[in-house]
Image (tube, rainbow, N blue to C red; front, side, top):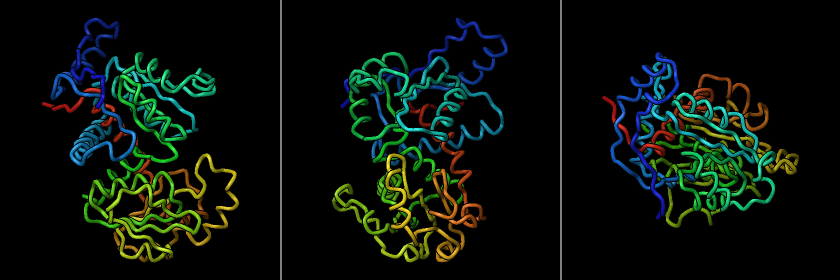
Length: 346
């Protein structure tokens, strides 16, 4: 249980800010419809999929739908005015940085970028100390790092919510965006079957947690030597099936998913992985074994001709561009929820 609490009410102090009148009026409009559902809330982190309940996921997805509609209609919406997101990067990023930084600005807040190359984080400062200090100067923190233990230790000493932007073990923001994307295109993912073709990496373990929460089945096919670590799966979880043949794993599924064969941090293994993963490309033949209305997803960046054929990722069943964009909308809804709690709109 967290020792700290954070204010979830929104204080409209726009009268005291030196913004132009037209901006203040827009801000008043966008914030006047917001009412926090409770005055305070215990600090909540999003470090892996299992940190949220199904009700929380459904709430955030509904908020993402509303926030995305407003974004598309160019409606100003600034519930996080005067709030600050700190983004800490140990791993390079395109989609994660852009979606969080743009998202925080679009919600009326500010985003600060830190990396371990130009801060004390890269000079031996204890993770616990960094958590104490950084969390006193902002409202929410996103970390993209290597070991899950790093973000867990940081969160344990943080006074504000912490979001996992990616670790070696989990990538919950991406999988949450993927589930939302499926919902947009096909409705509920409950009762569906998802194929995972490729490496047993952080994406797969987040998909395994998602299957348990949302109630769908996973068909998993990985090459020998890159299998699922069953010790990381809760005892009794039965909503997945392991396949030696990747084509068989695609039979009658509703969604086919893959990722690069060599994730960040494993570049030295690239040539060995290319050899080991021969045959695990998601091509037209594998997609043909899926249901006719099956979707294809890839968290990007993609290597056409390796883990996916160009005709698949650029084909009609691919939703990878919607999937990438939805990182923005899901994370905006998550930022809103973690900073101010549940809201209601007039």
